[in-house]
Image (tube, rainbow, N blue to C red; front, side):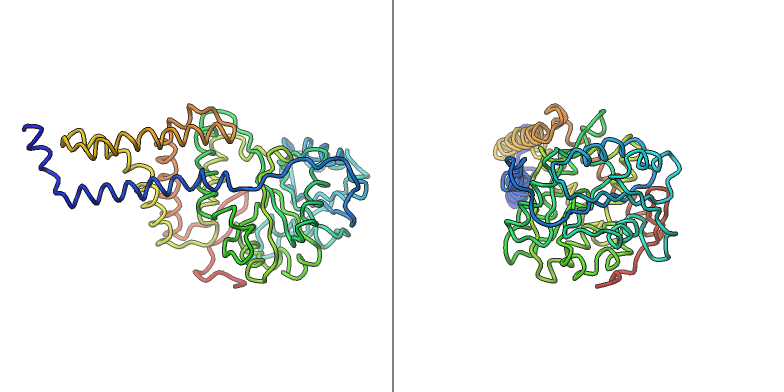
Length: 392
């Protein structure tokens, strides 16, 4: 078959459709870069007066012996004098309790009561800590977050100046090994785009997102929302809190703060898969949403790469030109994004593999959800919620 004949294989309307779809995919993928640049940045505040009001830091910990020592030592080094540090231990069996006790009396351990029915473990731990806290500000911190000595003072001062009811940070994600460096930059892009992250700061915006790794509340706002008790059944409690806060008209502030806080999200590939699987739909399973997610992954991230080979096979010059541009733009974008978030740029050139990883992740989530399998995390299992969810 000659080149001219092959070019006639595709009708004009098909070529136009492919070109239009390519443009949509390019715009969608570009949103991650746009949102990343639009994110406000927060760094260490210059030395100065400590913001008024007591700050209570609440760390809900369950078998966190590898991470807890560094997290607590960073908190003890904070340049805030009136700082209350509470560790709520959720029945750890790995020595986490001894780690906490060794840092007393400045760090107080609270043994978590038995988990009530209908509660997610982290929410119960945070709620237990909040009821014992005495601060005007409540900072909920994951046990794997290490902080700059000026982090608490800087964030409280920023939240106060912004008159925020709750403030949250995007931390620097520490990545080790092949799979973390490949998958986590892609995950960060998904979060930025899906939640329209920088729009959270706009007055009147419907965007709702906070990062449960580092979440600062005014005490009055926390009590007004009903705290973690109001989202007791949600595995993705931070998103549920953000949506409730937005519905209540509270002021949310989100900033990129890679100088202030660092986290190692997952310790090995198995933990990363289970952790990201938990994040796909939490306990709120909707098959249609996951099918749409699968279609988006394939349509926006994989199919655009087929335009160039199809154009070469058919001899269609517009498809060749657009396909070549897509390859350069998309691989270049992913390489630049990897570099920006701390992963070697070469991992961005493997982004189709990261996409396939996510296709598998969503596929497993869909199958488990259809079978009504519970969500598992930290040795606990949580049943799926009804479609409407509780506490709406």
